Image 1 (cartoon, rainbow, N blue to C red):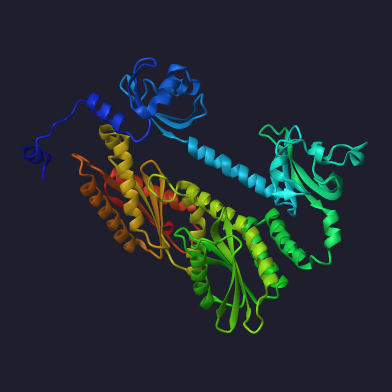
Image 2 (image 1 turned 180 degrees about the vertical axis):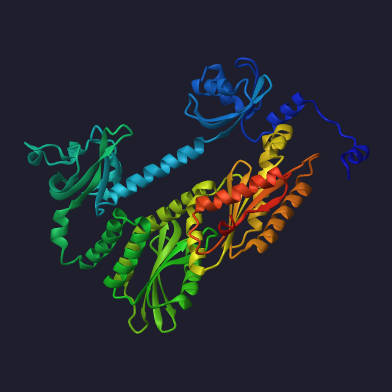
Length: 560
């Protein structure tokens, strides 16, 4: 139907530009305001109060952003910290003599990242040493962190805020430097302490300095091991030492290259050797709350993994998780299952397998339970690192891979095509008519369009295929085992997604289209990713030059 015919059937009432901007500001999900001449705020929603106050008090970053875009045609963007430590991602867009300012509150995100970084640093430093009395001091030498709950007869909670030097035996300290005041690493140094009952305790101290953001000394982190107790109980604590060796193996693995993955393998290998198992499996929590096997050694292959994963998921869903160890029969095998938890929540398990004729005993269950406790920290870190890695690779608006992830992934995909002697196709897409959408309907509508397109593109991508947002309104796709003829079938599917978008958004004169460049990668051609992308871009430019909203196939390198 022509535009004239539509207007005859449905009268269109167009609000004024000022009314549209007012509704945009009020309906924006985050902070939004319009700034007129100078720093006069014409309109603002409730969420924009911190930004309005920042303007009133003359926030230099915000004023610089406004000055940079005022009077121009292009918008600007900056990350701005306000006086009360709020952090916003601020976008400014000139609209005539005024400026539309929208923002996203990054405060919680930054705080979470800082909190996670602090927890990771503390864990990495303290776990460098075997855990007896773990501590952290501030720059004045006062305890700010202690574990476990009691040590040397003291309740460690009572030590917080106390000077660490007061724990030392005064006679031993006389003539010596305070080991808690050293601004350098301390390795297995013998110190004498005074226990809560007044007795003297020989301890082994390992510690390292903590530095602040400026590289200045901010305290000490380390451990104190009670050598007196160890020497007195060596014969009776053989099994406990096995447990410590296992835990120490996991800690040492965390120190070296490989991070959590190496620590997980070491935990499986060391547990098998110490407890005379024939097989070991490490289970980890999945995003949907289930369990999956992430490490498998020895006997008990895939035929048992699913069954054990289901059993671990069932146990982890029950109330009692911390310290839980169970045995299960698996045909001719017996499984010893020790749940791993973090903050009281099951995050996985370590499972040992051996012949059913050799049952597990309570001491072995206790040792594996100790390993599982240590493993819970490792699995928790692995899970969070995985989440951060996934977040860093995904474009937040469309849910597609971002440009960095696409650039990282493609060289491996080209090598895979070479090994399999199968061609692949790179398709680049540039939206036609997207800027007018932002100009007419606002960036919120533009974001809605991109979000809907991203959902459509994700639904059209197979398991071994890639969809990425390169930036703005540009996208790229990789289709393995796809030649030039079949590539146009994939292009048709992309245009079908655009047609569906028009029906879904249903805005008047939403004249969106797609110009598409296609470049077929010939397996074994040794063509680089940059060369392949350049061919696809050249085909894209030809499509735009030929009238837009069309696809062009790039000539192969042999044909050029």
